[in-house]
Length: 294
Image (cartoon, rainbow, N blue to C red; front, top):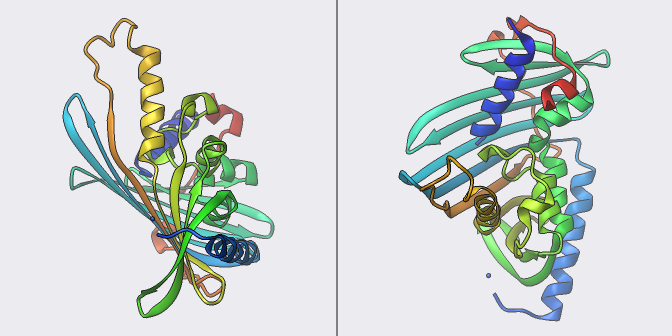
């Protein structure tokens, strides 16, 4: 097996599939306090379960296309154990499934990967985990969103699954939208793993909502990044529209890039163990992080 080619192809496939109220100063101060408490609480979390649902709809030369990606994550820090399962649909049909475990034993981390209907495993370091699966560190990602929230417009009381929650409506300001989008890997599931601020030049603010329980846990985040995606698409189109081979290419129209993140069982998650099939994985050697990026 050509390990470098395997990993390059594996990462490319994974990235491609792995695919608001009244305003007042009191609401602004109260909402900011709720968000800060939730952020501090999440920083201390030692384990959690999470689910990310991505609904993507766009129009290209072939017409309207849709995609749905459902990602489930279980994350434990001491010792480090992580499980990620990613199911993807395109046009209402199943188009891919990926699964990962990261298990730490005696200070050594092993990555188990389900790819092309077969399990593989390899020893990895923290840098490699960050580069390949960093977008699934929901403790870090959610905290970035909490830290970026501003312009609190309202705080509403809602009930979800019999639990009373406080819904905080906020905005990610246009001055930090580019770094927030890049640092959270929002568009990696759409194949954009190497964004720079230039691609988001001109992007406006983005509305975002947080649901926080009485224990100061953020249990849900919801936003639609369609406008930011449209900005990237338009900027890319302007770069290539006059180049040979792109004649007749139309601009993409992004109708929806809606993401819902549920944070579940914060500090109360239970590890279900690694599957028997994963334990039978074929062992391979991971390339250096720099090799994957080239």
